[in-house]
Length: 348
Image (cartoon, rainbow, N blue to C red; front, top):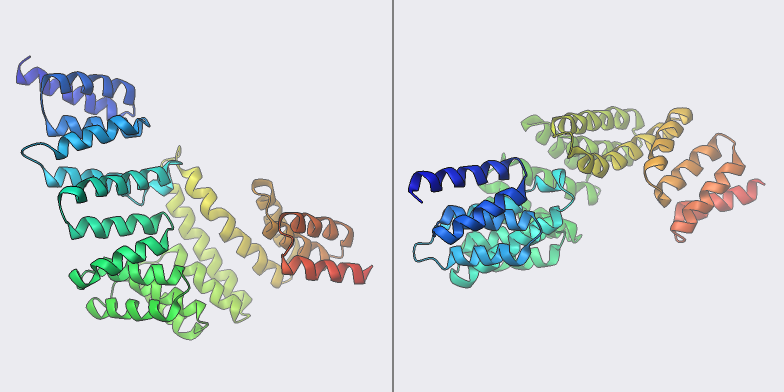
């Protein structure tokens, strides 16, 4: 088969890949692999195999690519990045599996090359997998080699934040900001840490700086939380609505068939906070309408407990007790529910 026909076949396989017709794509790619040794064919066959859930063949193709006499580092690392993109958590239920694929591809590469950038990416993948201890360990190991890299400062600060080592997290946020004072990720990490340290004024300053660079829904959510901590419920309502608007804009821009994953992950937390704020503002009917919608989507102690509080304030003690009991069935040590149940018993 001449070069023109081989290229046409590869193009056809790639079009099937883009159309997500992975079975048709892999059939052509497997045929091409018998005819030619090509980095493009090997890597696309590897990617499609993993997307089909065929881990063994996928990794075999990647190993073949690594074992070639002329190894294309950039093409291979593009595969590591492809499976490690943060966007997967918004568009695929398999995102955790994809992050693990990215780690496995890092390990294959690290068997042959002691590459600090690959180690840094691997640390980032463990962070996305919520394995903060492992991510921190990796970033600690490579930090002396790339102490001018902002991503390593971000990973160390974020991992320390997640591990509730707040003072250390602030330190690395500030060291990173010494390199680039406008880095939005580091400013936001510092702002979150200051919130948890209850340094609300400085936290607000940092979050406002974040929104001055580029507004985002997480910053407004935390500003609302700061307002709540300071009992400024009217400002909290304004900021939670700004957060919801930012989230909705992002959600609407996602492809419709994928957006439910991101939608569910963010909807509950934002609107639960809005319901709580409305409750504190004594807008009980509005708070109740929102919490009812949340309960339809997710049974949780958190939702049941807030519902019970709203009903208690509305004077519906019988139903309040029912929802308190539901909360305690799911979380027997829920302090708010325990206290509310005592209040209900005393009221009766």
